[in-house]
Image (cartoon, rainbow, N blue to C red):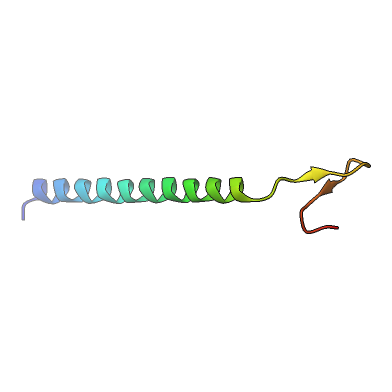
Length: 56
């Protein structure tokens, strides 16, 4: 393989890796947002303290 072909292959591999990392990031972001929206909302009690759904 000559030098130019090797350079083109290296750039293509870098582009594929960057695409894979980008897609993975979007998947993780979407999953995190979905989990965050499915959790019970946090309220406040009369004193203004945050109360979660586990506290009674």
